[in-house]
Length: 261
Length: 264
Image 1 (cartoon, rainbow over the protein chains, first blue to last red):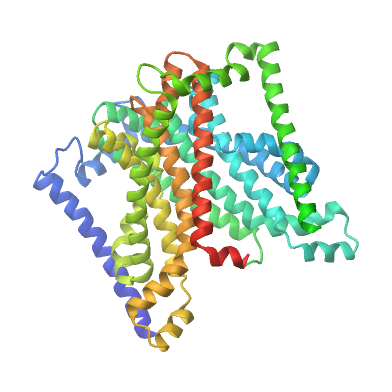
Image 2 (image 1 turned 90 degrees about the vertical axis):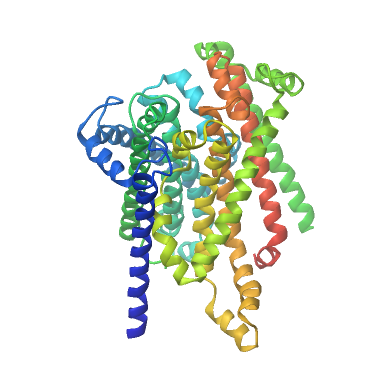
């Protein structure tokens, strides 16, 4: 046990050293030796400075970093919530009721292979470059994994469990809410996770193509101005938000999904 | 009897989906014909005609639709193959060797949550708007997914199986190639599947932001000249190709992971 702990600590220290070496090498290559021009890869210190500056300063693209984050998060939340609210019940219904499945299936199979990113120009034509078009794109990229996973979660319900509940006199509705739904929750959560990832990606793409605010807009404007420090700040912000969302989902899953593992 | 029943069932389902498909097309045609949406959306017939037309006639001044597809596919395949090689190598070595995990994990964890598409502006600054930038974006899209899955697989290799092989006199190299790699293959394949669809999305996004050819360009070019029919043709081509790519990969998985299919 003691040696195990020691090894763990040793590995942690190595991780820390490796991270420090990485940043140090980066610093050395950019700020001191100037191997690469600063417009292409700025030094970590510069990036930190830019990050602190962007928290309060609006130049060069007209909004501070928190404002961009807020704009992106708002659109993502609209689209994601709508997608989940429509997608999950639809998927559950399709998995539970064969008639509904047979009716909706063709429409769904028709829409499923279309990457949401390809819909961006169509949505811009319909809704302009404002919040609405991006929310619809996010909606599409959310609803599809939600339907797929809710559907297969319900379909994978153990037949024996259903039979048992039937033997004890459960109605069809009771079966759904007490057996099928709880057993499909892990699948549904997995779907929500996939949905978060793909909708976040679609949102960034939408903002790259046409927006007036948002993190994607910030990095694409920074690209036009050759301000790669702002681009990297944007990338890291996206990463941190991604980690944050994953944490929230871990927590929710722990709270809601009982049993299982 | 069972076989016959299954076949009739299959035919019945096929008919149902065909009917559903026809209903969608009719609904689409109806909406275009009789509502204001017709000003924005092309009719299904128009899209079908255009789809056939562009197979032999160039879109814009340059290439025909199949050529655009080939160009995009070539980009995807270059980036995707690179990401497979790098991703599987890093994933397996991180999963098996604690030292490598300790060294690379923190750096990888920083890159992991950044969506592949977000690398586009950075790639353009670094590599210009040429092929390298696109391959890089596609690589970043596939790489992360492949590493995550391969890593998960390599970490879950059954210790009992490995010890068993060692007890029977296998050396470490044999253990690696006979136990670790086959154990990881299904995980690698799920990474490849996710990676491929991400790469296909990434090439679209990359071509939409900056390109002169490719399927993503078809869509943005359609947007620029306000030609909705061209956009729809692009979307259909993209969807069908995406489906075909996924199907090919699933077939490869069935062949390479036969033991798993048999287990089901």
